[in-house]
Length: 156
Image (cartoon, rainbow, N blue to C red):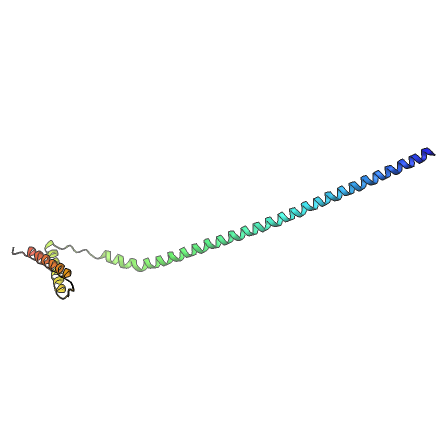
């Protein structure tokens, strides 16, 4: 009987040890599950953050694309305006270029220069100078014009 009591006590001790091991194992499993859950929560957070980052990056890219599109449209509008202006101005420029260039004889050019100087003299006579410097400059100009007229006369 003694042996039986010892066996019962030993069985009870083994039972308690097994209960303790089982409790410890349950605790370890529970902690593993909690740790696993923590990892899942962190993973969910990272996935959501990554999605949010992607969304923000896509919004930025969409905004930049919109700016580029607006710039392209502005450039196209400017090109249309320039094209319109060119279409308005080009015929006048081409008409001016198509006019024949008159080649005048040197005598005719000399006569035109004399006429321009005479016109200058007529206009200069009507000006009123308020200071002495202006009057001196005017007199020098008249002298030069008269000198050119004398050189341009054919009877000399």
